Length: 438
Image 1 (cartoon, one colour):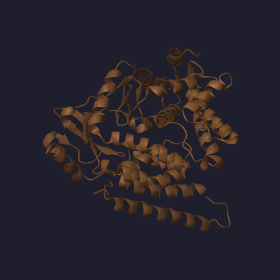
Image 2 (cartoon, one colour):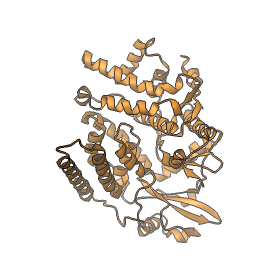
Image 3 (cartoon, one colour):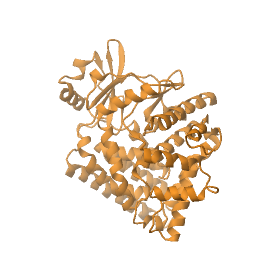
Image 4 (spheres, one colour):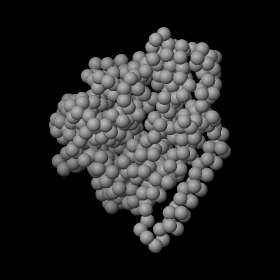
């Protein structure tokens, strides 16, 4: 198995890696078009080559660079080759060598892993963007030990600056919009590199959500955790990504889907904070077909000013409540005073389309994600607007930073539920009690 014996930590070395990758990608384009001058171009192969080269570079850099790739893997507007390749950052990145793991342990605890645990597996069980997981044993208990990569926290700001051009190119975002929201992404990534904070969030949310049916959490071990290491109970089961690809009875799919929905619904409407990283690598399905949440690196609080307008707009009717919806758009900086009539019409239509996707499951008491074509709607939304010249040339960011992870979480959750093919009770009455609209 391939392992990295070191991570480029100096800014110049990390920048050089990305520049070299950019040269590779340019070479892919040149090779592709020289082959296809006289015939129809095979764009899928070009996307595949580029995705592999970009991912290889980001995988070596790890940290913020690879985390952004992981986030982009959840964007259904990207070509399939990119989403498939970047999704490997969730749990199949190339791990670090055992020597670097020992070095981290000695720095954090003054001891090697084998001086702390009865057994410690040298090879990583899985590796992601911020850290990798090893199996350990102590007093007969099987444990999962998550170790953060060296230098990750120190390189976040530089990584985001370096990866911005990639995000602009792949996501078709205008630079003003990207610059405005980059600070929110950076703040969240800083949270994810603070393992002490993650440990506290893990314990807090898992205890608060214990009552939710068909949901479970690992036990955490603060004594064997630190700023760069988290030790928790090892959970036997199947990663949700693999679970969704296998043949499963509809009853089981519904059961898991309902647990996902109830988990997020309780957090958003009762706790006013939520697990903001809903990708399949963060969930395990146990042999008893229960959903286990194994990572609380990204948790986002919903500010008071955002909660009511965000969820109220989901319940409002675009035809009957047009004036109220437009006022919310204005209050939330989604349409602005200097918009021309043409721009105003375009942005209202675009935000209506986005809200309509979030709104779909709330229209009825039960929603069938398997037959909803909501994934297609998400992809079509991206395709519809990503080449729009008015949007690309817009010189102002839209919306508020705090809504980034709410939107991302709903789209990520809908993507998982669609791949599960789950039919669930969406409990729209919870929001109705809060706002009295339905």
